[in-house]
Image (cartoon, rainbow, N blue to C red; front, side):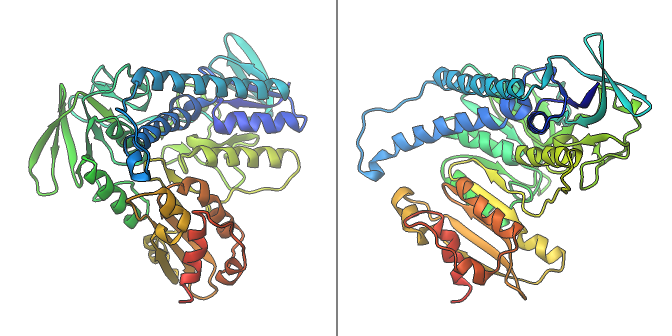
Length: 454
């Protein structure tokens, strides 16, 4: 009898398994593919590895801006892919080691829920039955394939984030359907390698809920680099290598690409593993949970993308921890007010908390200050030709930090400070008293805070 059975070895599942094992619980983890889930094998890690290679290539090509002269610079696509595979393999092995060192039983097979016997949950895998007192469902998400005429699923031409990571050579041209985070990161990568990239987005802006100013700055930067954007456009059909869509003006337009990437979002995986045997309640396609990640069925929890709420690996980690903390006697709840979002393009975008649009829709009175990233000396020293932007929202009455939005490198490495400020409800006065290291790009946060008093 296990204390907890976990379906899915992605960020929510393997992190929860590690925490549960370290606290003395008897744990069994079911994963039908590879430990690490989509994030480690088909998402976060492989894409960031490739994007870093592209950034190095960009820096080499433009090194004369910084007084460095080189010979002809080229890239080796197969070497990039090999390095990506090496990084993934190393990290998957690391997750496996964590499971072993915390005495987690890993079953490399699809775990199927067979129902409950009293309070005992029964899971079957490879013809063997397992019993547990608690169940954590962390089956993740999968790419959503929209019902567009001509799409019969993935093919040699039509790809999702999974297939595009296994290309053997860089395509001459790429049409990306969907200008969200995944679409823009692949646009960034292939644009750096010289691929002709076109992005078709149904909304009037890229990056969905991200701060509009940041989205616009990124769009303008990539337009300068040759990426073609079609906003307010609805794809109606795909014929061979041609994507046909309707513009905001009602015109029918077509664009060709050697490859076509579908990146219009992801959907929770709630079928194929016997969820219906428990009567778990769903909400908007995902599993419905409370702030302790409990479902409507006692002893059954859900965490990660399968909830359909915040489809981010770092959210999944925290949700899994909430489950284990509550199971081991530590009162804990999940909060979503300070979940950071990062776009790993070049330049990066990082954001946390409320945007101005969200603050207005909630009726929250706020003040806003914004400065170019060039107010930080270190940023000028390391970023030639791009000004960037830092925007901070604070409450009008108390001056507490409500939201922070940045574009410019390395925003991804600085945003955690803003997360802490929002989580602990720091005010302008308290932020002004914090000493930042100099010279660092992170000083832009402090400079923007002081802009409120100018």
